[in-house]
Image 1: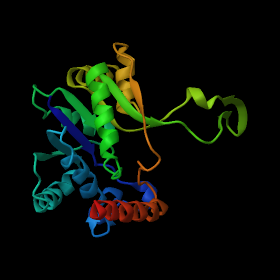
Image 2: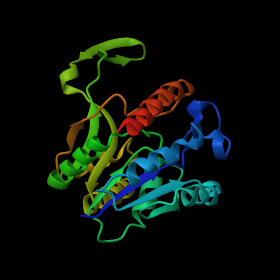
Image 3: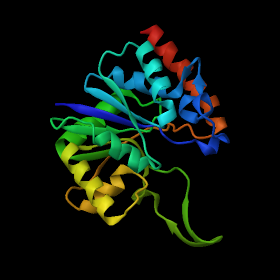
Image 4: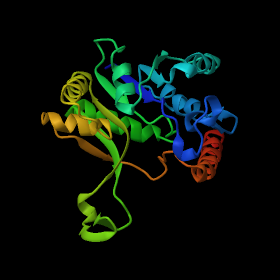
Length: 238
């Protein structure tokens, strides 16, 4: 089974308060000497299920990223493609370069470097059986539906999930979902929202973990350093 991973990394990272090229964007911020993007790539390089990795980047970052990836001496193909103005366009650009014999596509936030290897295998296995699967966690806080600043309803948490990544789909299914979205002018918030519109498969949810954080603001870096220290210590111990 051929599994391709797409890492959309063309965003500007405005929640970090910066919009310059290079290490100023969140996916290139240094975490213990290496960009967050590289830490994320390393996780998928270690996975026996992953066949290749495609990273979608802003045009001005392509050459620089190629150099970083080359230094890693990757054990499997890692390609870079030009991303788009939106995450959806970046993923679609990456889909266009995948080989037709690809079975599954896993889309993962480039700034989630702490995806657990066991969790990754679980969501890939679920997608292989069901056609579509995402990682998600049940919210621990009470969730309110509001209009402006007034509460309209309290939503039962047992029926809610906070979507994470990876989100894994059959290649043909994901391609159809993106084709339909383009034709309809639909812009989704994640890949699952596009696949859901097809109404061809039910998307499964694999229970995630709160360690699978998405680094989007400066305070996230403190937690990231802690998690990386723990991971490094665990690998050393084993």
